[in-house]
Length: 256
Image (cartoon, rainbow, N blue to C red):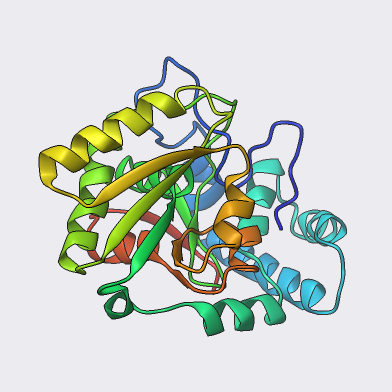
C-alpha cells in the first residue's frame, strides 16, 4: 500500500491532478536531471533493488524509503519514484499469480480504476517520465489536489482504451471514478458521450470508496494501484500494454 503524504502525490493514482493553468501532464522543470541521465537511472535501479530487499524482509515502507533515499542521496521526487517502482518479493509473486494476458479479456466483464488509468496514459502521452515497477506496472508522478481537469491528451487516452478493449471483444466495461474528486461527474458524462459516439459498451459509476469496490470485485480489474493489486482476485495491466504497444516516444525509467 502506498504511503500517503500530506500532499497525497506519489503514484497512488488519486485524487487528482495538476494546477488549473497546466495544459498537459508533462515533465516538471528538473525531471530531465532527476530521471533522464543514464547514471541517475542506474542509481534509481540500485535503490529499487535495495527497497525490494528490505520490503521482502518485513521492513516498513516508510523506514525503507528513508534509508534508501539517504543512502543514494535521492531528493523527495526521486524517492517517490523509487517507492512507486518497488515491491516485496511476496507482492511481486502474488501480483504475477493474479494477472492475466490480453487474450483472457474476451467475453469478460472489465472494471477500470478510472483516474488511475487515465492519468498514467495522459502522462505517457505528454512525455512525462513514467516508471516501470518490479511488478511490470507503470506509475507516474502527477501531483494531486482533489480536482481532476481534462488535458490535451485526455481524449486520445480514452480512445486508446476504447480501441484495445473493443478489439479484445470484452463483454462489458465499467469505469469506476472517485466521487469525492471534483469534476468526476463531468468526466463521467464525457465517458458516456464517447461510448455512444464510438459504440463502446461502457458504463460509468461514481464511488465514495472505489479502491474497496474494485478490490472486492470478481470481474477483471484494470489498475496499477498497489493496494488494489494486492487484494484483487484477477487483473490486467492495460496501461502497460498501451504504453509499450500503442504510444510512441515514452520516457520510461525502468526498475531493473
